[in-house]
Picture 1 (tube, rainbow, N blue to C red):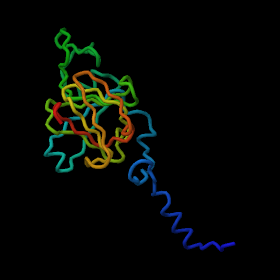
Picture 2 (tube, rainbow, N blue to C red; picture 1 turned 60 degrees about the vertical axis):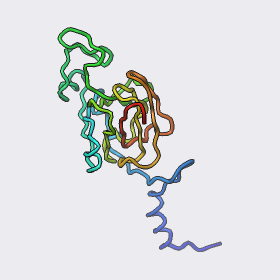
Picture 3 (cartoon, rainbow, N blue to C red; picture 1 turned 180 degrees about the horizontal axis):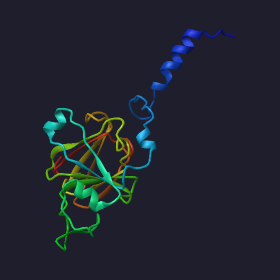
Picture 4 (cartoon, rainbow, N blue to C red; picture 1 turned 30 degrees about the vertical axis):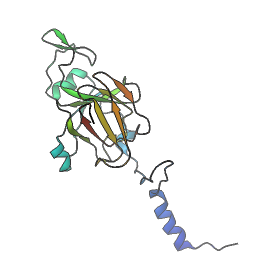
Length: 195
């Protein structure tokens, strides 16, 4: 029978919670509990601005604003639409438009594109994107993506566009459920179809 070394046991206990072994990929450091994730949702409809490639290269992180009302969330983001608009039917001056919103994509938690949504507002698909800090509510929450303006969307595990990634493709309105990157996305870039 071996005697237990108290110094070694204490050192191992201090290190063990920070090690996670992943199957089928590199080990990831364990995330500390995120009180924002455990808390109730900040709102059913959230918006953020598409960051330019230059902003992403400078390390700028996305700012997300949420509301329980779709039209309120869009108004706060500066998107003009009639108060009777919904995510599926946008009206401007009483006329229904296909996409008067100016968003490049919508990301959802959970699968299927019918629950809480993050609307990424922008008009270009030239490698701009969004990036979350480890404690942000939307970090590691995205399970599906609805393409709007951009035909190719790349979802990364790390918030600096590194590590494992998953690409979704499709035309406006195409919904893609994520596979291995579901609930692991920390940064995203948007491209034209040929990426």
